[in-house]
Structure formats: C-alpha cells, structure tokens
Length: 307
Image (cartoon, rainbow, N blue to C red):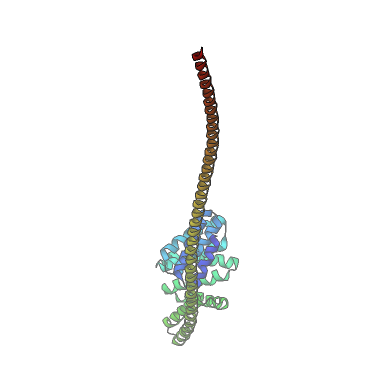
C-alpha cells in the first residue's frame, strides 16, 4: 500500500496539487514504516526528497535524501543511490551550500554515466553547471550546459530544459554575447509559457478531481447518514417486535392462567355440588329416620297408656 500511496503522491505532484501530494507522501511513509520493508521505504522516502526539493523545502529534502542514501548503499541499489546524491546536491544548492553540493553531484554523475542513466546524467550536469555559474567558472558551466541541453532536449524534460536555457542565456550575457543570450531567453520564455499552459491544465484537472472527490465524499456522507437512520429504524422495529412478542407471551400466559383457574373453579364447583347432594341426601335420610323414630315413639307411648 505504501507504493500505491507514493504513486498517488507523484500523480498529484504532476497535477500541481502540493497539499494533496504531501498528504499522500506522509501516508506512504507511515505505511512503509509500519511494514518495515527497507526497499519500499527507500523508494518512498527517496521520491519524497525530490518532492521536497521541487517545493523549496531544502532542509527536509537534505535529511530525507541523506537517510535514503544510507539505505540504498546498504541495499546496494546504485541507481537509487545516484538519485539520492542528486537530490542531496540540489538541496545543498538550495541551502546556498554550493561547496558541499559538488561532491554528491559528481558522485551522481559518475554513477549515471556508469549505468547509462540519462536522467541522472543530464540533471547532475545541470546542477553542476549551476554551481559553476555561481563560482564564475564560465568554461566549465558552458561545457556542462552544452552536454545537458542535448540530453534534456531528447528526454523532453521541460522544467529542467527551461532552467538550462536560463543558465545558458545568463552565461551568454555574462560573456557579452547578446544575440545568443536573446535566443536562449526567447527559448526559455516559449518553454515556460508552454509549461504554464500545461500547469494550468494540470491545475484545472486537479480542481476537477477535487470537486469530483468532494462530491463523492458528500454522497458517501449522505449514504452513511441514511444507512445510520435505516439502522436506527430497523433497531426500533426490532425493539417493537420484541415488545409485541413479550406482550403476546404475557397475554398467552395470562389466558392460560385464567383458563386453569376457570377449570379449577369448575372442578371445585362440581365437587361442592356433589358434596351438597350427598349432604342433602343424608339430611333426607336422617329426616326420614327421625320421622320413623318419632312414629315408633308415639306408638310405644300409646301402647303404654292402654296398659
């Protein structure tokens, strides 16, 4: 995932969206630190050093390039080490430490020529020409610029080519060659105008992407809220169903209890009715027995009187 984040960061850098590019680089670095894969971390951090240099954050670019260079040397990755030496040199030039910048740039140039890596070669030559111009070494600056211009033109590295035109025009002006200085100034102006158009197009594309992303995020937020509301409604419905089930169960139990009580009462009533019938029959038998006894007593009394 760290390499995916890094590629997204590079994409947003090309679109001219520095803020989003930096955000994705930070995500890439965090992911690389988490996975602990040294080669992936070096790739991410190395690209980050170039991004920082492009955006003028030279101190952090120097730190990132130095740390990545140490990793590349351990991993024995010569092309990556050459790129980091290039970024170290660029950062040192940006920090006005040109005397220190020459060594890493010469190392990058030497490695670039050894492995025939055109981008490393021409960018190193361009940076060394910048140092030569600062030191007023016009002969070295012209030699380096002439070599760099051919490679930059073939590779169509337009931002670096514009910088080379500017340095070449500055060199011609310093040597009093107004015609050549004017030619390179026109070439630089034309190329920078083209770059501005491309940058404006990229910026427009970035804004369109941001707008689309904002719309997508808003839609996602609305869907999330809707899902939460739906979940709340479902939860309420479940609670209602549970309440209804509990109420129904309670009602069934109550009806069962009432029916049991009714059956019990009916049984008791039948038992009581049977007892009442037995008592009534017994009372009748007792009454009949008493009547017979009374009749017998009367007969015995009358018989006693006659005697």
